Length: 329
Image (tube, rainbow, N blue to C red; front, side, top):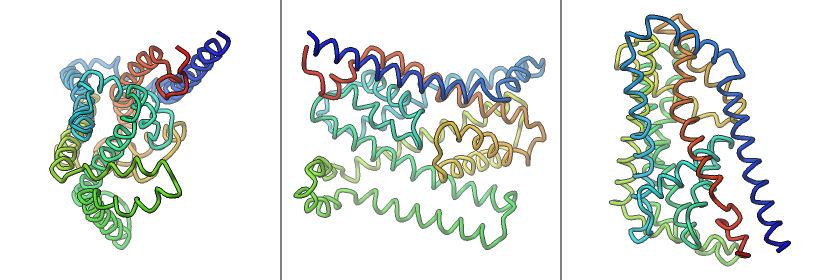
């Protein structure tokens, strides 16, 4: 009985810590700075009522965004994995809740495996890793488009630095695509490591990733990227920031490239997100308040709301039992 009580107490403590950190990050990102007041001020402007349908479409794309992420993950899991769409979506949302409090969203891996049982967890981790690689490749590819269309005209960099950035991103995409579509070949390099590191044997499952399977994951990643880029453009127009469509899409691609290039802890990323947005969108609008309001709105809709849904699922899970540390029941 004492052991059961201790395990339950520890489970509650872990969840309480995770929920506290999640609440702290969301509070700091949403309410603690000037962006929240700017968001409220912009929402109270009569002019935004004429653009309400931009907000409606942005909101309607939230389930599309995370539904595509779920489909991407499912496409990279083994065919006999036994996880349906809705259970997978629950795992993805728990991953969002935990990832939002970790640098570069690494907590996503731990969050998703909480709804996966036994040895299948390594398949889930690998699918998440490969899916993240696919999303990164799409983001870097979009970054090339952003640098070509937006960066060359508006970023105040010397030509040598701009060209160097373009070459580096291009080489990363080429190298990344080669590694991505030949990931199964890395099994031969991992095998010798299994003698020293037992856990490496689980990574040998990469041999199951055929090029067809990887292409499917990459396609879902591209669709998801297009979805949240369109969301950004729509929310900007809702707040009255109206760049030309092509320039706007390129600017968004540039923003995501910059944000991904510099992994930051969540609380530091607060300031970086706003500063990057103002830097990029100041070319099209001098209304810094509307720019910050759009950036904050997108964070609330695309990350905070799904993270809160994920936290509601998290409290229903026995974390220790999910990780195999509690066999007392």
